[in-house]
Image (cartoon, rainbow, N blue to C red; front, side):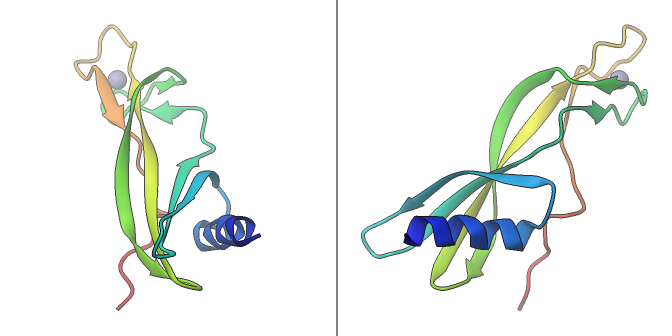
Length: 104
Ligand SMILES: [Zn+2]
């Protein structure tokens, strides 16, 4: 199945640490792959306290990838809630060094 191939392609592209949530193929054959990290907690950049509380999720378009046809990758990004009472930062966005930068 082409959907399975797209899913495994995205897994290769993102290597470990991400899982594919959804692959949608439009009529032109272009696929949109939605991924998220498997991370279950994040460290607050202000206070350093770890939290596993997800405040909300947002979608970030990572880039277009030419892999057996066009693929748009959407990163379903977590925003963590910091519960540390002494911390001014209520929430903070997930970040990762694994999102590839643009390849020319
Ligand atoms: Zn904090």
